[in-house]
Image (cartoon, rainbow over all chains, first blue to last red; front, top):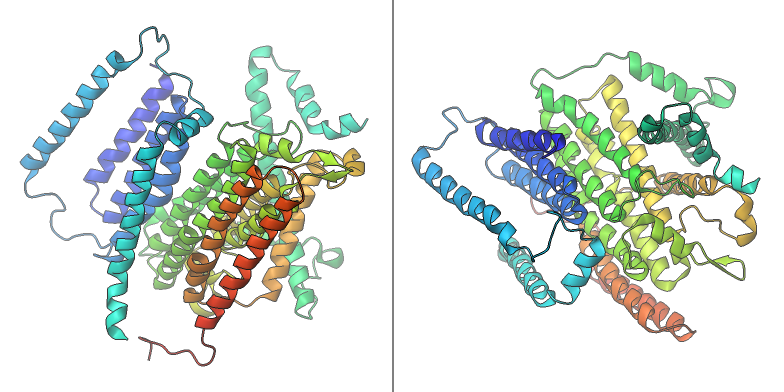
Length: 168
Length: 391
């Protein structure tokens, strides 16, 4: 447990908390970005370069931007007048606790999944290794994900096109 | 002697830190390199701004700045002092924290990109295994700062500019990545140094730069288009189109914050030129073997400045696109071509040495280009534009 890890953890948790507690939706989205960045830095701290950079590229470069776009294009970024919090905090608490329990269980049991004889907690995996694995052993899941994403993309285009067809 | 000139900055750095105790030497060397980057590129920015104002002036039949110093050479100094001493105005309704953070984030992000670029032989700040990925990841974060600037200003022009900028940057990021991917595929590495090394070889005194292959040439052109759009440069400067949006997302910025946006834009342009140089133009390698005596860093800086001149030239030449043209161009022309270019690069890799692959690859790309351009133009009807909503 290094000192850097504590700083990054604090940053990530602070970002996450701010995303939940702030009132202005755009501020929440920006705070969420801080949490994403903290996670990416955690990956980098663990020497997982590819995961870290992919986290930045996808979550900060794409997901955060999409979140922000969705906020601006739909409800407006005005601060709600009343309480911004949920009316049923108990349900949310139960769901959060369940998710936390599952994740915690997975993390605590992850050491048992390691091949015997592993000494270091972080195996050295280069980007080339990940590429090789994706193109050989995991090529079928990769293709399935690609197909799914293409279908989603076409679906989105069809939803967007509908209005244009009618006006012609 | 040639070796000394080539490695002068590396040797200088080592000499400077040799006065320090051994434990501090490594951090001091890194610090020195960071300071060097932070000093060098803003200096180049000043030169570029002067060059742009002079060059654009000449292209538009006027003189450009010629009052400060001989031939107006000290204009950047005057500009710098002016922007430092100007009042910093924050609009009353602006979101002060986000408004302040946006230019800071932009400048930080833009400088971070230089960390992985090989500026000369042994002159890469961090030799990352996934350097190219790092550059793109960091570049993607600059979209966020543009959005923050536009949203926090509480100005409709700013917001419109930011929305345009983000939409444009997302659209052109895809072809930018796709065209770079061909190089990564051929080299088999995401490491910037490995990519330069692969191009730093000569046959008959001519270099092995990727731009001198059919897929590399097409890839470079696509990369250049996408990079121009990605940096919001003319003819893709709709996010800051003066005639429509005042200054787009940084309308409400004044004084030094405005200067920071300006700096961020130009340093970002240089960074992406540096990436294009690394990927397609052989990085720091000399264009001819006989010119190998010129230091490697001089070639890199020279290639960047040449790209800046092309940026200026294009800005002085082409009119601004319309928003729908911009999007159509990205999704219906640049993206399909860059996808095809990936296949062509793969074919090039597996067709082996010989004359045949030159013919096949060039023919495929050329035919695709002509057919797509013809089909695209046929659908385009010239004449008065019909508006659906605006009338």
